[in-house]
Length: 238
Image 1 (tube, rainbow, N blue to C red):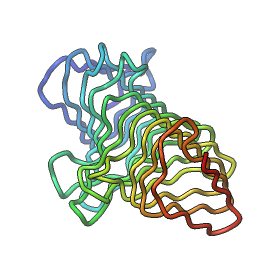
Image 2 (cartoon, rainbow, N blue to C red):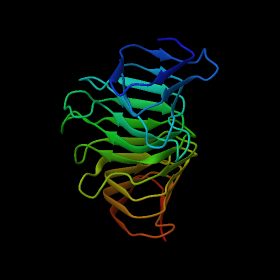
Image 3 (cartoon, rainbow, N blue to C red):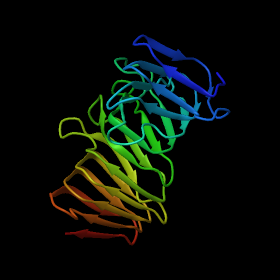
């Protein structure tokens, strides 16, 4: 589909089986007028916007082999004009999972990593310099991957839950500053050669630090994790 913009004005499910390119238009957006559902089976170029707060569900479908998909554009525009749900992988199914790269800022009430049951994890990769304002949860305990690609990035919202931890959180790439403004629950946290700031609670089995610096509990909370150094990294427990 190539168009200037697409308005979702139905509560029926709309499925795009091929690439969606909205870049030729002046608005370059897929806009939820009502609380509809959009399924993407390929890549999308353009912004995804909402005509109101907490409006619209977007599912990046993936497939049984966890194919790579991308969205090049922002999702939502603010905390008061966010979409309701961003699904990475097919919701309610244990077959289709996805490796999704989003090259834009994300505003969503909820982001869910839907995995291939307990076998394979869906992964959300947030491109360098992009931020996400959303809770990020997993449909399956100890599955699902969140990767911050680099630059200055902030995750505003809780990541995982104590009952359903993510499998992996990867942050602090070379030269990057990654900040988590909410609680983080994961099996494994991996920090590269950059800086990671955890403002609140951290619950993980293992946090592995390469040559980077991790600042724990910069505004409050506690840290419950084994800390392993794979190089000359630093952990500051504040």
